[in-house]
Length: 152
Image (cartoon, rainbow, N blue to C red; front, side, top):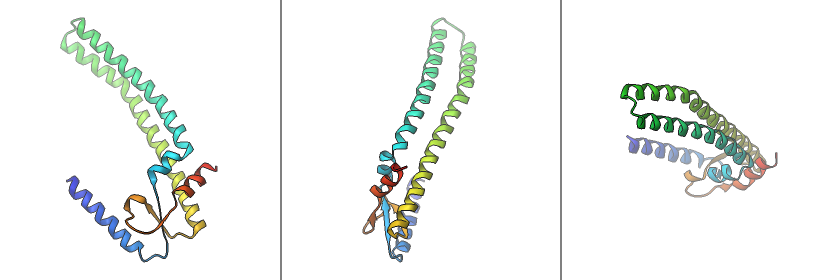
């Protein structure tokens, strides 16, 4: 299934490249490099890291409680009940962490997209793709996009 999906995506990208060849100008960015060098990424990762550390501490504490209960010879039914209670307590925090990750990533993506549009307009580029789908040609806009992002 994954191979079929990968084949479809590859064909779609190649079809997109063929269509893009009709444009007079093509640019590309190294998305990973842009994310890595965008200053806001590190602060977002730091914020997410704090939340993850807090969640991990609570998770580890709950695992210790379960282990202690097991060593104390609690019955299986009691252990299962305790486990489900601890999971129910952690579930909202896990959801909050996932939502925070989505929000931070979404904001970074929107910032990058906006910077790509600004840079492309400045240099007269019609189409900007991810570096991974460009086989030949095009102009690397990565550094210009990074500079645009970090100039804010």
